[in-house]
Image (tube, rainbow, N blue to C red):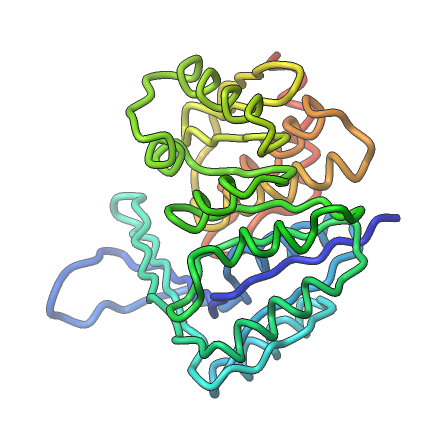
Length: 310
């Protein structure tokens, strides 16, 4: 069995709750509070573990909130390797407004990392002998913009598939270096990457296929929100419409999508099969409230529904 490592340089303690109505100035009474370990790679690991994969979580954490993050990871039963940092781990909050069905998400920028700290994270990942490395999430302050590109260089020539789920200059630098197995930007992130507006799945697919044919990325999956997703790979472009389901929370849907695709590849699926698993996991995630992400039963149900929706 291939082992997967996920890297989260900017993790979070993800809080979630519900309120009747969100308004300024006055106290807002909340209900159904929950706290989960979060951040891109950690969310991916949580879903992979639920789907039965062997996964190691590599993350940076510090301060009193870092200790709480450790505790939450242990509660979830995840194998972890902590890179100790001086600054505090961030805390995020998602508030579901019952009156409107809207979700409000508050996401701090996170800690400032020193060079010794981010280099410790890099060195650990560069020394892994796992078959997969999923580097996901934003770069904290102090980390060089080409960090993921450096990871790609470290993975080159080894039996290591690198998945990068980020945005902006960090994603651009990684793609410019090349050697990536999968990237998964949202439509907005992908449009920022290519520098133009893309109207509809076909335009997104054509731009993504151009990137694949450059030889720098084997698979480009672009999520389109409620319109579905697009996958470009060496065999062409796949466009799938979204399943129409009630949305409880969008938190972690993209991370669940990445986990689903990696799970599909680990099962021996081709690009189309892995894409179906990604769609299933991403869709299942929105069915769960707050920061709960997706569960195997819901993923399997969505996977079956997607087969009927071809």
